[in-house]
Each structure stands twice: as C-alpha cells, then as structure tokens.
Image (cartoon, rainbow, N blue to C red; front, top):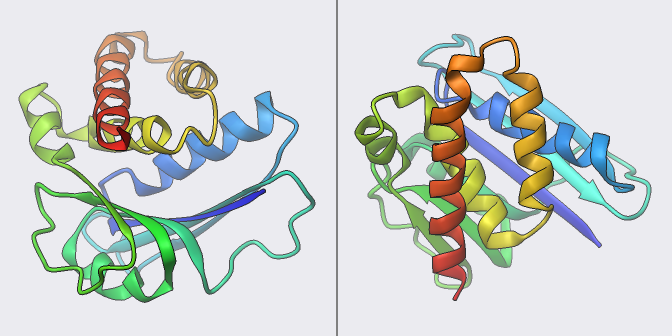
Length: 182
C-alpha cells in the first residue's frame, strides 16, 4: 500500500513541521518506506509552503506524483492550487477556520477541522499543525498515534514546557479525526 499526501498552507502555519513529524515517525518506528519533499515559496513566513509525504510498503520510485491520495490545506490559496491533484475518492482535510471556499468537487471525502480556532482557544496559534496532524492520523490511521506522539515528544525534548500543550493539541486532533471517520 502507498499513501501520497500533500500538506499546503502559508509559511508560519507549521506545514513543514507537520510533514516532518509524520515522515520521521514512519521512518524511525516502522518498516515502511517514506519520503519527505518540501517546497517553500518566495517568503517563508506568510508566503506559500507545501510538502509531500509518501508512505509505502514498497520502495518509492519518486518523491512526489501528480495524484494525491490525501490533501491537507491550511488556507484558501492552497485549496485552489492543489485541489486538482487529489484523486477521486481521496480525502481532503481542511482548516475550516480559514478555508470557507467551495471545494468544487463531490468525488472526494471532506474532513473539516477548525484548527486555527482550536489552537487560539488553547492559547497558542502555533499548535494548529499538531492539531491537524492528529486529525489526519486519527482519521486515516496511516500510522499508530503513539508512534507519532513519541516523535513529537522527541523533537520537542529540548523545549519540555511545550510538551503538555502539544500533547493536548495532538489528542484533540485525534479525537476530531476519529469522530469524522465514524
């Protein structure tokens, strides 16, 4: 099985970190193959940013393709830019706090999560990516959530004060993702 994911948004929304957490968790704790391919816009904070993560049971021939199984969009411009790459039957994850545009398709599954709003309610807008990562993992079950959390915990180990909030954000995302799957 192979899963192709594109994560896209503004610079500063943690798009790359979300992709890296997922790729690192898969690479370091499973026997699956994984690639991570970042793409930065002209400006990092406030400009566009996207990354591709491919997770596969078999060797991966190329880091990215033209057709995505899953698409995470954190803003409207990213929806417009990447919606055409999502395959029919694929899953679109939307930051519904910001993206209110009609997706213009009825052949994909839609998972809405108000991650910006939830992050602000938690007191730190920077955890919106961790919430969305939880939504993605909770919905797709592409990798064991415990493995993803171990990776987040390891990556943030030099900043232990951030761990409780990030744990809460990840758990909130898992809860939202699992609820929408049912």
